[in-house]
Amino acid sequence: MVAYPNVTETKKLIKEIVSIPSPSGYTEKVIQFVEQHLKELQVETKWNNKGGLIATLPGKNEDEHRMLTAHVDTLGAMVKEVKSNGRLRLDLIGGFKFNAIEGEYCDIHTAEGQIFTGTILMHQTSVHVYKDAGDAKRNQENMEVRIDANVNNAEDIHELGIEVGDFVSFDPRVQLTDNGFIKSRHLDDKASVGILLQLIKRLKDENKQLPYTTHFLISNNEEIGYGGNSNITPETIEYLAVDMGAMGDGQSTDEYTVSICAKDASGPYHYGLRQNLTELAKSNKIGYKLDIYPYYNSDASAAIGAGNDIVHGLVGPGIDSSHAYERTHEASLKNTEELLYHYVLSDMVSY
Image 1 (spheres, rainbow, N blue to C red):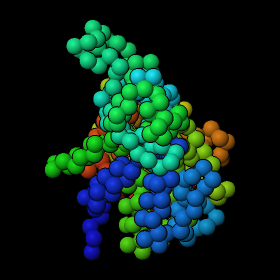
Image 2 (image 1 turned 30 degrees about the horizontal axis):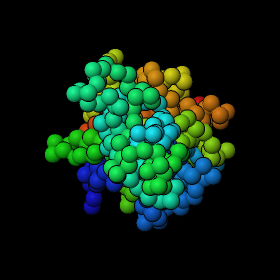
Image 3 (image 1 turned 45 degrees about the horizontal axis):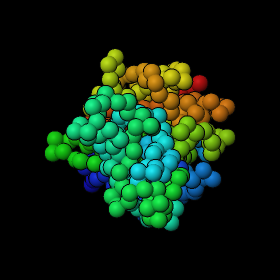
């Protein structure tokens, strides 16, 4: 019998998912990957009009539903301008800063399906030429993409087929270490997508009867604010976003436990659901931390903001250096999956 959570399998799955480019607005291939994975598990899925994927596991109670969501879209960029010096100016997708991608390898995805590699650099990179190489602002004006092609002007770039509006994805540089860490770009929120897929597999392997019909939304627009604010069935009572736990000064979240969010920038999460999650963690000896994320919004808060009458919550693995080169540990993945497993098999609390 397979021992769960199979964290080694989870890490391998996350590595596959982060390796598929999917900045917000360019997520079709990664959604197809998730769809195929669920098809092999014989799970019913459907696409929504926004390009996200909804999987449903029937439950004993068909009148009251749960929904869990994780987002597969990531930070990225688009070509803002084809510059006369043979380089590209970028416009960012998602809430992060240019300094987080300085020196990063990237791919430019053309409308015709071609992919060109490049590097994101300061225009004033060379310290042998530019006196202000270290002090110049890392912003849209100064950052540019050096394309790995023989291009010297805008005309050369156009001849390659690169145009304004082409998507630019970042090399995830994913690594699995021998002592249990996984470090990569886009663990926000592909780590949680991997966890949900493993959770579904576990439930199928164990032939578990869920107490409530449960939907799993793999959303594809969270980084721009509206990934999970629709497609919520009228029967849905509890809506749980599975996203990263943010780490830093003043935070209790770490890389080894599951983070349960009490409040983020949108306001407090539902107290009753939060208490239920905390009690499930305690009773099942799952490592957890309670936290508040000051500059953060989730698909659950987007769903509330859209007017849905739901009980909302937020949990996830602790992710270090969010929106940059991120890292977490297999212990956090394991604790998150274990909490979700006990949650979907638990009774709803009285609201």
